[in-house]
Length: 191
Image 1 (tube, helix red, strand yellow):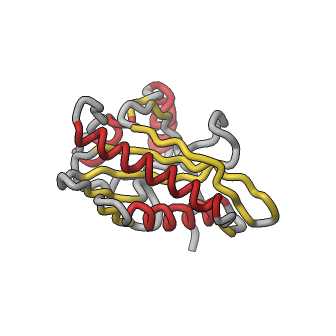
Image 2: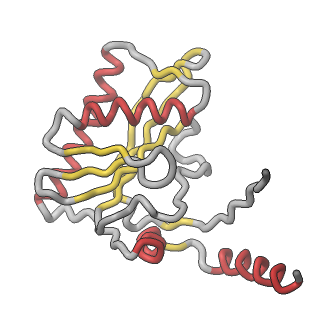
């Protein structure tokens, strides 16, 4: 048992020593797939970003015009409903969004008109852009099957009345150069 304890303490110490760590390094280490940064010199990357940005802008504006709100008791429920509705907006364009499994990074795989794959993580944020709350969990990268661009769309939301949420805006960013911390998640395993 003392050897196991020393190994665990060593892992905890190592996680402190190597953070912050580049997101692209974590993805490559866990999947053997490269994170391709957006390059706005390439028309394909500009077009992808423009489609995502204009779709998100239209999405927010159309929900506001219709005064529609998202219902949910928990922010994760609201985030999932926003994600579903946003994918419907993306389907009006010439890119093909595809939902990936319910949990874990990333949420959406996108195939653009050039056949290139990108991954999009969609998160609802109610605490403001500058809060210290995590944006997403990255576990093992099992949903990442290709070298690709990785983007995050964060939806600013506010609870207008009990369990009814309004989308206030969004931020869309390339996370290829994201610096992250490693957090050891200690959960309970039981019968």
